[in-house]
Amino acid sequence: MPYEPGTVWQYEVPTTGSAHLPPDAGYGKALTNQGYGFEVAVADLIDNSIDAGADKIVVHFLRDAKRILTLLVIDNGSGMDDVGLDGAMTVGRRREYGESALGLYGTGLKAASLSHAASLTVVSRTKRSRAAGRRLTAEGIEDSFRCDTVDHRYAQELVDGYDGVIEWHGTIVRWDQVRVFETVTAGQSDQFLSKAIARLETHLGLYLHRFLQDGLKLDIAVWDVSSGEGLLGEEVDHIAVEALDPFGYKVPGKAGYPRTFTAPVEGLGDVQLTAHIWPAKSKQAGFRQVGSLTDRQGFYFYRNNRLVQAGGWNGLRNPEGHLALARVAVDLPSRESSVLSLDVKKESVTVTPAFTLGVEKALDASGGTFHGYLGDAEATYRDGAKRTEIVRRPVTPPGKGMDPKIKRVIKEELPEKPGEEPIAFTWTTLPRDKFFDLDRENNSVLLNKAFRSEFNDGQRGGSNDAPVTKALLYLLLEDCFGLGRWERGRQDRVDYWNTILLTSVQAQQDRRTQAAD
Image 1 (cartoon, rainbow, N blue to C red):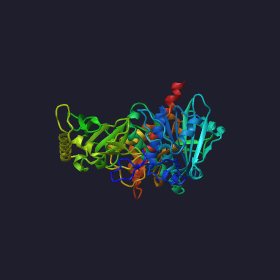
Image 2 (image 1 turned 45 degrees about the horizontal axis):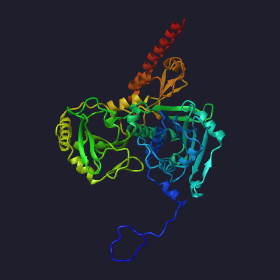
Image 3 (image 1 turned 135 degrees about the horizontal axis):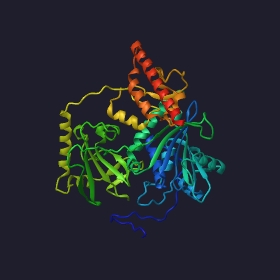
């Protein structure tokens, strides 16, 4: 409608035409500064893998003797052909998502990757197309969003290198020139990777716990390209990510919970709130190992079974210490909502006052109020605070070489000494008269690799092998680390433990020989 000047308020702004304005190359700087944390960015890549139907995913760190080189995420999803790769790498392109998809805005692959790496490469193969790849770099974006085509021979070679994951179809996302890797000084790679992998394992175990409980196989591996043979070198560390369920208590803190409340939310309808009360002073990983207890109380929002906010009251009330046991699960609608909106990074939810007003009015099946639930959670906390608790001696935590499941249970059962480097377990060459030795300077238990096959059914085993042996040695030797002067009595203990264990392994060898005969 043509504009006619006048004094009447214009409810719509009059226009006279339009023009298509493609993004300037400077948009690339905004793309690379989205505020993605490292773990959040990797989780965004894994969301794409899950959307592609993958049930096996590996987060793979590659290093050499001096530095950390690159990070890759490999999956056995449906894969992409050339057309699909071009679409996936187009900046600003938004594709259509199904109602069950984890993707929402169509920017995650580029924004998450380029927030941490100067170069993003995607190589993929479908059942009907050969391996192909595309590379997007910071320089390419400045050059009118140039996207490079990967040599198909290299694409095929990379896919073949991961034939244990990719069989007929799958995708590899590769980050190069990762900024945080380039800050790691010489000799600090092991320490950096140990901490980075621990944080990543916790984040993925928490935010993807429903998928992991439903059978998703998600591993984190470290390979050294300067050792071993082949394109990828030799594996030096490997863990399987376990579900870290924020509602995974064995017995609730108060009988009658969890309890479902129905909140009438204007503009959204009835919203189900599943209210939980954790047992007081729980040591379980799902309670203690997911961050600050104050930050983790409150709402846990899920979208299509993917956790997108882990704690926080979203304006309903302020976090308080006596509500540390209160956690509420809320499933968001699959489609966008004007009442509950998810941020691009998928780690927090913005709510309007309509939601908090609805929660205030929420009732359970028997007419109980949400306010009453908060009162029950507070009373459970206060009752638990009155109970006397046995204080266990803090320990130096186990580290590299110990199975993650064992590390998690030790962390649940025993408090950690602050500031201590974890105790690593390493198979190495030792004299035949020693089963183990201690490298106290580097906080390592050294195991004689001549006996390694005895604990792996005659096979080589992985980096986290011999779990029972390593756990028993940890319990025996933990107090030998982090000391000042080395006492003769402790050395005597180490010596006779060595003698007894060496005899034990020789007895084991004799039994295997007799069984073979």
